Image 1: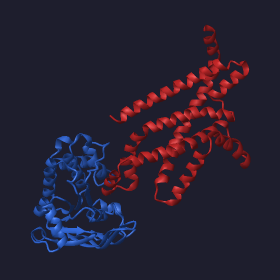
Image 2 (image 1 turned 180 degrees about the horizontal axis):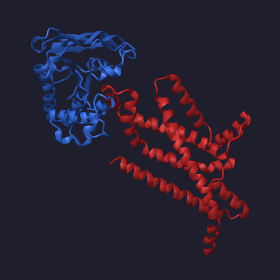
Image 3 (image 1 turned 30 degrees about the vertical axis):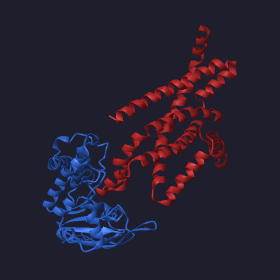
Image 4 (image 1 turned 90 degrees about the vertical axis):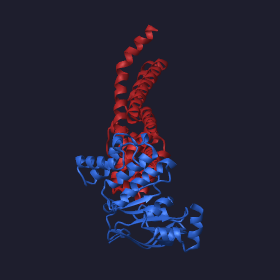
Length: 217
Length: 242
């Protein structure tokens, strides 16, 4: 057993390096995904048909294709076809952001739809323009409704970063694979990273519970 | 002076014709009560007056602005038309004071301090001064509706629309809301009220309008409509509700 702890301690520096990349990717891509998701959501509930169409195509492409295919397509396919270079990290963030953005878009839309119709009518009847009514009356209520679903999506995206190991992104999964390819100690190594993912997810869950409690006063 | 005027106002929901040509003029300071069976189009008509429902045909003129004209600034005109809903529709994430102050401050009709003073004055007027910091969920239905009236008045409208303001209330709370409305009427507010409160219509209205099947069937003073209805449908309806 003490042997095992020694082993874990010996690979920990490399794993922490990977964890750092995983967390950076998650944070940056989710921050962008919230913006993309909100924009796509506004497009999808807009009365302007071309905007509905744009978000419809976006959502169906993202939902209709696997994340791994998306990452290969962007990192290898697009760069080859259009002849440009992009860092793996950037490609990973773009893929995760587009992916999570699509699902968040639908989550936001359902949250807005769940706010009573009378709220928008009351706000508009006071003379508030659509955008102000959305920002000050509808969205604050919708956010409370969607928090559990947003947490779910954040957790999914956090874990999906491991898929980006396939394009060579040096995140936690990739680092552990490299360790195993050196020493073949797959059981011990993968057990450690499973625990690391688990701990991060639990921390994220706790943070959301706190936010949820704050918002409901 | 004519405040509200509709000409051949029509509204369809899909293939369903809800309003089939309504002509109405409401003068400044006049209190008009719309009565009629459910499905007669009263609420839809009221909602056309501030364009919460887009009209299918005809014109709606408020303060000389044609609301059916696509170029009119509907937000600006709505500031001048308060509306009170059957379900109150207070904003649950804001407290009473914030509910009342939101629109006046955002539309820059008032500074924050000014809006707060106005809100407090209006709350006192509806008898809820001590509830300023409460959230809507902590208020009774009657209290919520009185806050909703104060919220609408905070924009200093000179027309008020009431869409069955007491229909969702427990019976013992109807009185406190009607009391506030009576005071408004006495102060000279132009009011259009969709209501099932025949007592209120009889006592406060200058004019009672009976609607059925998307038309105005009969109108007149409360004495005329309640005392001596001319149309058979009006008689049938009043026989059932009185």
